[in-house]
Length: 434
Ligand code: NDP
Ligand code: HSE
Image (cartoon, rainbow, N blue to C red; front, side, top):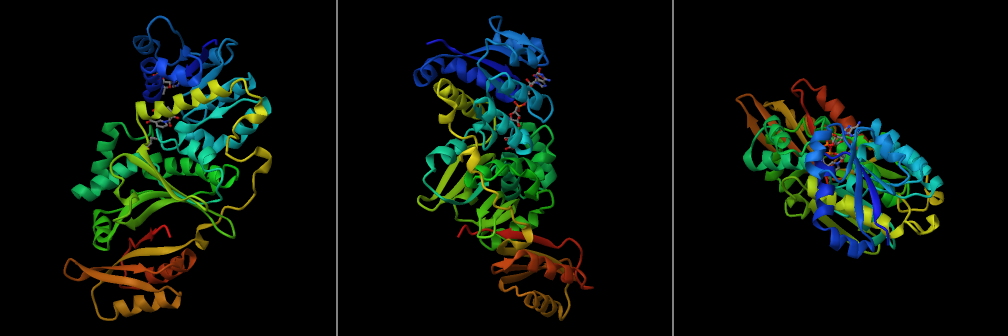
């Protein structure tokens, strides 16, 4: 059989990994795909740098459109990133009837509905395994392995940079800024690190997971997003004292009224598997009604792990290229005409437990007033401790029983108005995965 001819847009961290994996495992991959996968052309900005990697046999251009419109290319692999050039090249590739593989979660989270609709109309495949949790085959697992299940919830550590930062803050007691600089030096962070630390990258990925889990359109604009930049080492220490670790989680859950879609730091029981996912590693928990809990763990970023996912998509395309489009695996796990308009819920209706840290003047009556305001809002306290802060102040830490987030926020609004409460009230969610 003729080799599959690939045009590679971008030869950076992930693109160079794809080149290396294909060169390294060519024969083994061909045994699986049924034919050779051959990169025939690449598009980059710096031709000399690319030439040093791919040699003289492969065509190199600075014009991505040249590849996308080349009738001799079967599959376009987009590894440029971003929402501008990448978007127009992918849409043009689809218009040209080419299959597409991409790692671009930012683009799919914002423009996925349009891209999948265009691809469906042209009968081409869009593979995006590398867009979520790098090398972990979580999309394949959810789209194919778990198809028997009504999925109830998905919770994951899906950003390596923030997990690395939180792990180092806990292990070494370092402040946030120092560890972020180290994560950037190690190459984990996105081009714009605020995407990592403010939870945006995780929300891009979670948005895609929610669609795969529940058959809803991609709705990044409805995701609730909080990052980790406001976390202090003392919150991590207080959580530890209570038997928890703090992780940046992406959580999407089916409820009777709709879908929760939220990214935020959360306390997780220190003994749980997910609490022990350290450094830049990723992990995704999926709960299905038939299978129960399943856990997927591995490297969520980096050249070779991400390339592993890109090449897996290439093999899928090579296998399915000749299949009738009606028999392609649906992009978002559910058939396009069977998508649901089940709503995404607002955060006020979310129910979970809360960790509250309040810095107060250390004087009589303070605790009684705080307890009364929590009680007035129907919030029950599970545990509490006080830690002195200097001579005249103290940090009071509450762990609540499960409560409605809107009620907690109302109580905190009243608490913030109390004269003895200082600014910077911390409210973190606690997830026990029940
Ligand atoms: P890099 O910045 O390392 O590489 C981008 C590549 O795109 C470079 O080769 C660059 O060329 C090329 N490029 C940029 N603009 C153009 C253009 N206009 N025309 C042609 N080529 C262009 O990015 P990554 O490899 O890190 O990321 C690629 C994608 O993969 C992104 O969507 C990212 O979010 C995603 N991803 C990345 C992961 C990672 O670990 N890095 C993990 C999972 C997903 P040149 O080299 O000449 O400058
Ligand atoms: N910046 C991302 C992370 C890269 O830290 O997980 C992989 O998507």
